[in-house]
Length: 424
Ligand SMILES: [Zn+2]
Image (cartoon, rainbow, N blue to C red; front, top):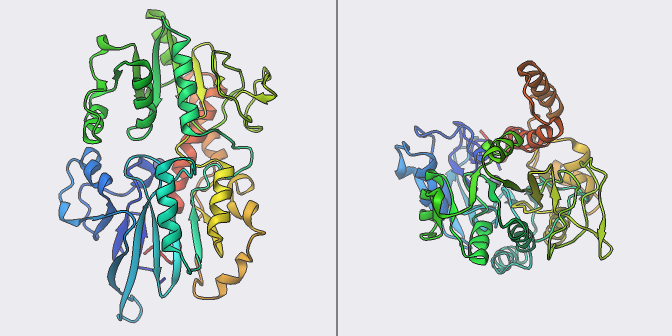
């Protein structure tokens, strides 16, 4: 595909059509309420939520809704020859956060799949539908390039289904009947977890006013509240969830924090009833107190006396990514998350599957991935200096873990399909 035709999650002038996978902030960098550079394609749910994020957006006429599982033809033109070119696109449920989709493109350039952020839980009925759509669309067609959410593309990232992780969260809450509970969430995502908690414990959950509006738009009418007196469980923004917050809350009332995340944090085991067990990540953790239950390491972890982390992830773990790649058998594969090439570059793990180098000399000639200007390490080092200067009493380990998650997101901005196929 020629440069200057389409962009995915990349918001700069110069393409003819723009595709938004979902509304998380790291996928909308550069998209502003004054957007005017071309039609913006997204799913129906994303379109519904769009104004919660861009309330001043003045060109709603530029929004184009794509139904899932249906091919659409886009009449574009070749920037080099000026000749008309048709590109076909299909949106498929990415099972990440509400509205998140993958995009499958086909045309003279071949066939490409951009996953955006995705979770490939094959046991889930929704994922089954997406799987069916994808296989049907790819029937008899070779997938030339897979642009993959490689957030956890390392065998050490191993976590259970979101349903199992949800049970762990309920267990933690149930084992603290006299505590207030705060759960860290983003402005979008983890709704199913909160719904599960509410249903199992028959309680409302507090959210902040903007989040309540989002919940209402998503159809959750009676479960969430902004009235703190109605519930002991609060879902709070991730940016305000910290040890300091938990320490301050505990000065007033006994409070436990729960952080649902796929990232392995620290190993100290929650020993409450009904704990779901599974293999524990082997890297990126520092606490030594681990123990086995039924021969397998338990995976609910507690950071300090106030905060539990539970491996609830909206991204695929390594085994799911592996299954996905084996299913699709792409000719070439590229990660969409920039990080240390040693632990998340998908070619490191799947490179022996296909001769990735060969395709580059053909019709997909010249794709290049823009390197991030800063590395994770350099930004962390800068952050360390700032923390020192401020003299804040924050657990170094805890904040460095938090930062790594955030930085992975930040660095990701730099490589949203910037290849010649998709970018201006
Ligand atoms: Zn996301």
